[in-house]
Length: 86
Length: 86
Length: 149
Length: 149
Image 1 (cartoon, rainbow over the protein chains, first blue to last red):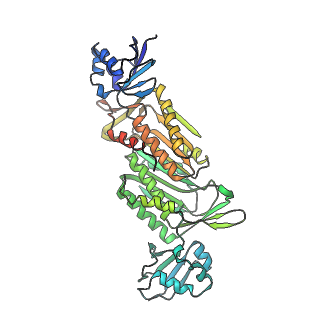
Image 2: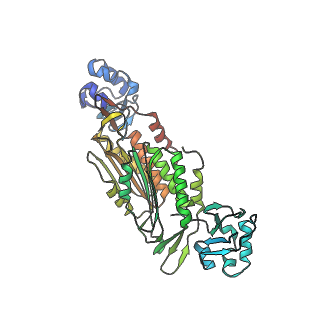
Image 3: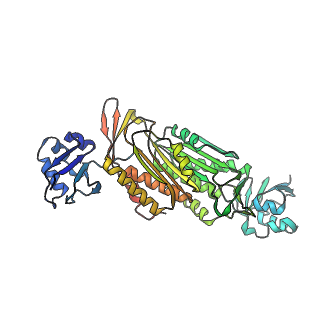
């Protein structure tokens, strides 16, 4: 199965230094929270961006979901701060 | 003391056939309801306009008041149907 | 900026919005009432009580200014003969806070519809009829007697 | 008539109001959000999630259409760099019923402010800062989970 596409917005994007990247697809029952914990272990921008998961929100295939959702077979996972509207 | 000026609107005005008239000022403690009962006794348009007081509203010197308000020393009494806005 | 007009002439909502946008607020809310052409209506005729209307509208605008932090209020109410599709009434509000602008706009239009001294007559091809007050409108306006949300 | 635009360009609220007035409703409500220039703000920068924004806004407009008898809905949301006094967002609604137009307008702007995937960064002369989400906005939007008044 294809890699998982991650997209980042706002200060998450800035901390990581890129607006998207491909990562190796985890097992379908791995949650978003578990995935970003693994990514944070890379250190650097990922560690900074994912240090406080309570400040993060996520969308799977353009739908808001809780961080504890399993990634399943989604093709795009977005990680970002709470939205601040218009 | 000067006469009391009565002003009429909408179908009250049409029933009476004029938009204003002067009447002899009643004693200050006479209520609007009592005054229009007397006027209705004239018959004709006044009788028609004032036949159902529950369908009438009033203003004394451009302030909405209940029909049971005494006329006091007001200079203008308006009688009209419930307003129907814009 | 507070401005009230009771007039026979049409008005330009665009110009009113521009003026409200310039009042420095974060949000501008507006409501424009239009004559509906239902049931074969040919025209609506609005009669009002000139000596009372402006004073009453000024009072309710003052009340809105007390309740909400507004930077601008614009009220226009037409009278006379209006055909379907014509504008009858405009309420525009500007505020730093969107809820204040929206709530004050709703408050003012509810009041105008239920308490302003206007009477409407409907003209059809074969008859005319005075519009009767609707209890519903009164209920809307009374709702505002509670403190604002 | 339902139309949604997510765009960098400015828009003309007047033209939007005219289109809504022509939809045959008895009332048109609108809200225009403007960039406030407080605290020395030089510009606001709005970032969004394009693949998500339009789909989300379409969904919430559909919800408004289910809840209220609307004849027209217009939503415009800008992104990019905006200076104080510039328009950010527009919501316009038309309905035969003024309460429906006003409530749907408030519902849509509350949702856009609290749930649309936009992020704002404030630029000052000497620094920039991402705006933090306000619990208040969430509360406004959650209020709509109750049935409409």
